[in-house]
Amino acid sequence: MTNKKPLLVLCGPTAVGKSALAMDIAQATAAEIVSADAYQMYRGMDIGTAKPSVFDRARVPHHMIDVCDPHRPMSVAAYKERAQQAIADIHARGVLPVLVGGSGLYFSAVVYNYAFENEPDAQARRAYWAAQAAAIGSAALHAQLKLRDRSAAQRIHPHDTVRIVRAHERCDVFGSAAHGNEKNVRQSPYTLCMIALTMERAQLYSRIDARVENFVRHGLKDEALALMERFVDAQSPVRSAIGYKEWAAYASNEWTLEQTAAAIAQHTRQFAKRQLSWLRTMPEVQWIDATSCDPICQRRQAYAMMQQVLGST
Image (cartoon, rainbow, N blue to C red; front, side, top):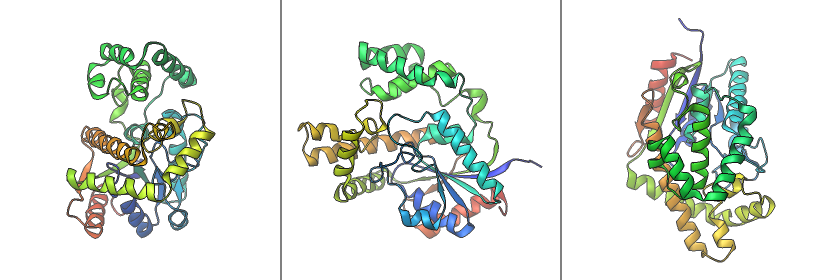
């Protein structure tokens, strides 16, 4: 027997349909949702993060959404602490928490209880590596990363400054840029049922393109430009998040509206590929192929998986 509390995790690449499945399950089981999205926690970043609507949040309690302003990034350690507290509060009410999202480092930190050493120094660490990037350039910083963690460097483009900086931060904390300290990785404090949605690539990419088109049609440009004008710090999530950072080129007349939308779609497709690569490293994940499996089929498969791992919870 175990005294561990149950946790359902629904994950998968962007636009695969995990939020809709989470809503179905949460409504049917009176569960509560905890967001594991790296940007839904920021107020004002609504359209570009596909934040749950006010209507959905009224139907099912959501946590870790709109908890801070996008002045600077919330560290993964701070997110983990607040998300785990939300999960504990949900358990205290006798309810099943459902952790939902596609940001691998964020949900992994919660699920496997990553130990973030020297967290008081986290801001100083980020500031140091950001200053190094500004001083020597992203390519040189990437070359340094290759010496510290060659496999991580191979996964990151030499011009992707944000991910290079974060990889160096993880090297400082864990000794490598892997998902976390290996002694923590498979030690979950929860009875864990982790379900990931996947989808045939062409269909997923088509859904991503349609999603970006819908975002633009419903005001993403105005939302992003207003946030960029308000939050000018280079460390603000507005300056690094896909769906927002691309509008800087539009604002400076380097890209047209069509080029900006195309860049957002391309970056989102690339991100979805990275999300799937992350998930494939986790043997605990149970997969549901949503390519030809409608929402009812997905729900039935998810319930069967939950029953097997969590019992009647």
